Image 1 (cartoon, protein in one colour):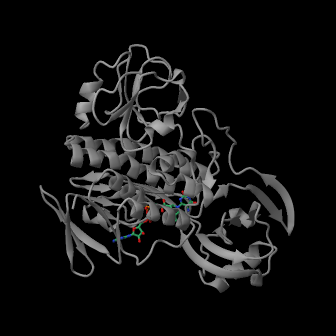
Image 2 (spheres, rainbow, N blue to C red; image 1 turned 180 degrees about the vertical axis):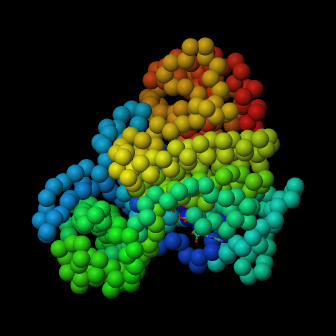
Image 3 (cartoon, rainbow, N blue to C red; image 1 turned 60 degrees about the vertical axis):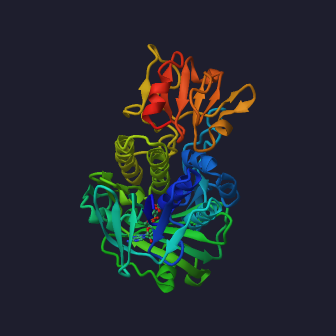
Length: 456
Ligand SMILES: Cc1cc2nc3c(=O)[nH]c(=O)nc-3n(C[C@H](O)[C@H](O)[C@H](O)COP(=O)(O)OP(=O)(O)OC[C@H]3O[C@@H](n4cnc5c(N)ncnc54)[C@H](O)[C@@H]3O)c2cc1C
């Protein structure tokens, strides 16, 4: 097998989908018997919606979600004010999705899983990885039932407590973000409208939020409690919390569907690659859920790695292309940790930065800017949407190929639009399979050499 992906969370499923559509032989192994049941990462950022558009799940994600509701602040059973959850942004020709979209994480995962199966991918449930050994030719993975499997590459998509990360001896460097205990739970309740994200502030920074989850009957309860609180994750425990922090009665909570507690910390894996093993998603970075970055960053890790593994395994690109995964995504994750810690502490607002549209790889060794005096879109930038002669760019980009804007196709495997969009500024632009500008020039001279270096 080419690639063994450990964990069927958002990271593993994204990578599984991307590799399946590239014809790479991959298997996802998952410890649990079924997909994760909780709503935790429910805010899909605009950049993730673009990725989902490319992966063919956007329509289903749209149908399964809704916009982020306004925050309604309550005090002593009275509504005392309404606030937007983030700074508003308008969609435009380059940015079709300008606001986050809310979908319960379990639903997002169901949609991704269905897409994976449609593309011929597979998850082996009930397979817990306990360790691995690697040699020059591949990796042997050990399972809890004593069996083993062999793969060319292994991707640790096994979450914050990653066994694979430990097996390859990679440490996490970081710090606690908040000493207070937090609770997240999915509940059903009566007595609150489903048009608001209800906030019930308590004493000394404690409090409870109840957010309706679109296309379900559930609310996500998220709470911060005084240091030293011993959280009870049973239905009774959650009922007591709701009765203490809100004007609802304990019995108004009719069902508890899932609950989890945690203490936010921000930490980054010291390396994202060890030989034939890659760390991605929560296995590579953990942080506060504030600002909704976790799932989104995880999806984008996998999206960055997918085309590179495809190029090395299917097109003979050099192994060094895989080093650029760690180069690009580790820097990105480090910035994201600061951002989510800032949002958690109330120092940074949810807005432009949390939507992830401005993230890019200008500093990457894969970003080659050959124009003498570049203006507009640069090598390393996200390739914006737009139209050329009535053709939508995102329609041209959709799929596993490279795209050249402003010249004829220089190689098989590259799609071309001979006219570059005026909105990009002057030049010829080579767009990577993951929607970033890899190379730019005044003319197409030199693009062939760049493409040869990445296996095209
Ligand atoms: C309580 C909580 C609240 C959160 N709230 C938000 C939020 O509001 N917004 C947001 O964007 N993000 C939030 N997140 C983060 C978001 O849920 C994660 O970033 C996202 O799930 C990461 O995806 P992943 O696939 O990397 O890891 P996970 O979703 O953790 O998936 C890892 C998978 O690997 C499996 N696995 C683990 N060990 C093994 C093994 N040894 N062998 C085989 N399989 C294994 C697990 O069963 C799991 O299915 C929250 C996280 C938590 C814990």
